Length: 501
Image 1 (cartoon, rainbow, N blue to C red):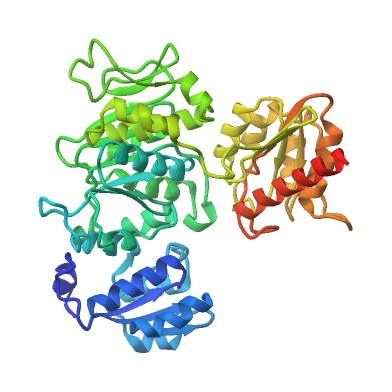
Image 2 (image 1 turned 180 degrees about the vertical axis):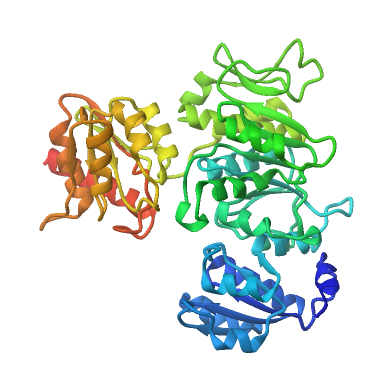
């Protein structure tokens, strides 16, 4: 197939028939890719090291071929298939042998998001155009901001679908027969890396975009902090209307300044301080918009108040920043302040995001298992100064020294979890020797979280907070961050039950 034909595959109605496509990975995302491509008439080979029973059963049903087995080298079935395009799931890193082979072979390499952009016109809006895309990334707060943005857009009367890294593949949203006005797409740095490889035909042109913040994460996958930063910065490329950035995180401002955007796109700042004429911020406890307002040089539009957010459990500083970012995105699409205000009254955070598990005998137990990196954990610690901090897990190549020296130093004590605890213990010895540190080692009669609760109840004297904000991934001891949070909550409930008996 000529490169000209592949470049021309920019519509659901293009001629995809007979295109040989290899799909790498068979998670929810990988299946959505295979399902889309077979519907388009492509010849599809799916390769994956493993797959659920359901996906394994369905792949041949939809008309694709499935090869299961190790992918530590290029399988002969792939080279014999001679793919004209490879679509990789986000878990495949730049250093993966199959990805390197694709590069060396000159085979176009897409992610699921690029494929979704190319076929975004399957279902059109009433005016005959595809849904607008709003892109959201950042080291932390992506999912919360994506949910918030979709909620605010819906409150403004727009049909909005949260999708992408949030758990619903973008391709599923694109193919939904109901159709949408706006797709609110959460993007991981992995997905953005693949977008960065797109040629002009596959480049996204978002209506609005934001990078909420930047801190070291996924360094093993990307190979360096600079590569991670460069991937995140791609979220702003080609933005048409609003590049929303975090005024308190200079890296996001630099991204906007350096981005190649559509002419006329505006830079919109947000932070917890007093806003300038193109910003959203806070004045006397009131969240206000001075960006999307005709009289923005002299006045501001009220969105909500810190007191109202506190009553909804949304007043933690990093959550307020997420609200400001989401409000900026929603305002860029014309949602009125009153609609934003009313929607925030009913919005609630997901489980495992600064979730109060229980308050008993003077101890407040808080589950922020979703704080899987230092930046997120720092936000939690700042919201709960003096807490007993439960920290550790799979560090993904990230050094906790800066976190421990900063926000971690405010903890009253630390309880270290994880299989490999020494890097965390060393960080405390070097950077916060004043903080008492305990190790939670599973015992004969209970798991790691039972030991955490046992240690914590012995540490807290009178009243206090115990905060699970691990600053690490969970897979060394748990199946997911949700599993980690649920086991923490169950251990707390078991303690309360024993205490009451």
